[in-house]
Length: 120
Image (cartoon, rainbow, N blue to C red; front, top):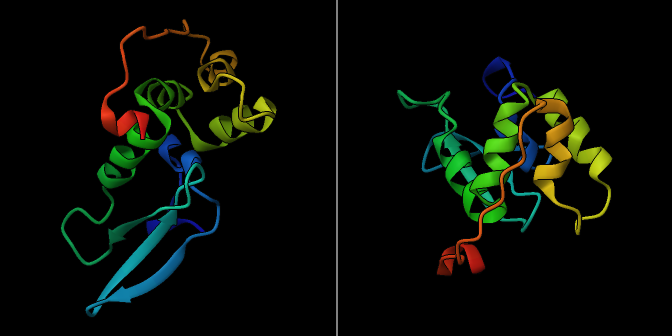
């Protein structure tokens, strides 16, 4: 399903393909399920920022890491990012390596210690 009539942002690759459309206190909501941990991220459709991916980005950075989100963004579209994840195979592989071949960019590694939220 394509939220708001289009699904082109690479951030959607971090969430399961099927989303739920529900109502919360009378507000229409798209519920995206995180592919990493199954948590639900809500996007309200009756607000001024209905097409914003801010909540999705915030959650993906916590669950997958800033480097993975940046690498997916470098692919420029969701189809290419999905193909990279499919070819990744094992969850133990580096997600940034999976995106490297499509973005033609340099893979960057961080040697900083994870924050409490990232380690969780």
